[in-house]
Length: 451
Ligand SMILES: Nc1ncnc2c1ncn2[C@@H]1O[C@H](COP(=O)(O)OP(=O)(O)OP(=O)(O)O)[C@@H](O)[C@H]1O
Ligand SMILES: [Mg+2]
Image (cartoon, rainbow, N blue to C red; front, side):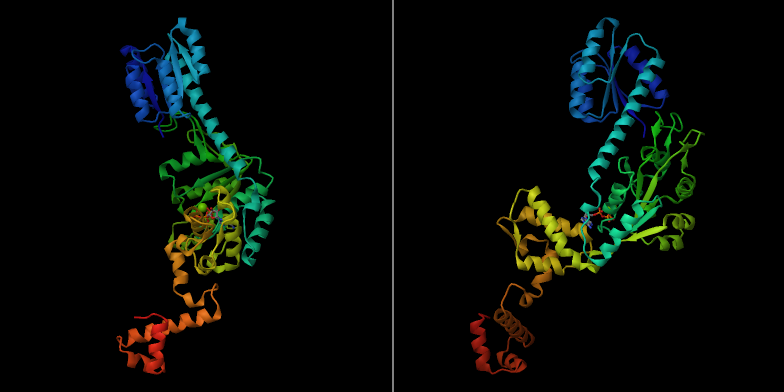
């Protein structure tokens, strides 16, 4: 992605000169002649960097700096000052400007300041990665499950986490693949280094290579500054390729090469860099079928399929559901400050019977929603999503919260209604179908209030 720079300078010659030069260096440039116009632009668009003169008509460079910082801490500001204003420049830096340039300055000095800023931005990105990793540490304790299938998954996680072999996590959407990847990293001895994540389905094919391997300044049109790739960010840690089946075919050999010799080369460079990275892959597709279909390379498949971890869909491990319910209830009751919330037996039954095409994620969302919607101290059927609630309304006579007698009556009533419907409302016919006398039917219609 090209970096977008806003240049605010009232002297047209200087403004045009800088714009022209920076455009030729591959930046996207927007120009602004005064403070008012600049602030309008900052409010409207997002810039990577603002280079602004300090003395400007209407609002000065300080106003622009404050506005830019208030809107996004990500945007950098470089101040241009006259020699006499160095004290102001120091003040600007105190208020969050990245750097200042004293007039007159050369194109080269300008470029150095810009480059320094974008390097700093890269470091910031790295910090974000690290912070994310810290948050996700915690490992296995986040993973719930008691079913034999999940016990297997836990065993595998523990076994692979002490090695460096590639791991392939396979499971339907919402089964917890990402959570498993987090756990593997968190309990490995790489856990103090980043776990960098890449969603292979979300990166456009033309940016993929630079995302993974990084690029040098000027490596291609738009490569306005040097950039580290994900493999370098992950150095010493792990890298998680989510939706690996969607990795562009053309890139698959390049990934395979990195897996084989653990070296990467930034685009535009010819010196390979050694990286020490543990790779984890996830997919909800059948990779073997992708190989047959010709969208996934067979050699890469064998390379990453060394230790598969298969997470079965929730409907095939229903023993886990009560534990999920209990944990998610606890979590969301705390989060939404609703202590002591319970679940009605009916709602509980519905949650146990449903077959969850969206797996654990669907169950989790259902409980979150119910905790939010619930207006008294008990979650009722009506607080659940329709498709889950429907599980129970289909079998009301079988409910756990009613007595045997109520259950029998419920069933009797259903049978009578059914017989009446089948015989078009003709009572004699319905009584015959049910094998009871007209008189008994009459009595029951009254008792059950059937009209
Ligand atoms: N075993 C589990 N214990 C606790 N929470 C779980 C478990 N499995 C899944 N979840 C929760 O379900 C949600 C979905 O999990 P996750 O994002 O890991 O699934 P996924 O398999 O990566 O899904 P997708 O294929 O859609 O990306 C998350 O909120 C996660 O916390
Ligand atoms: Mg996922």
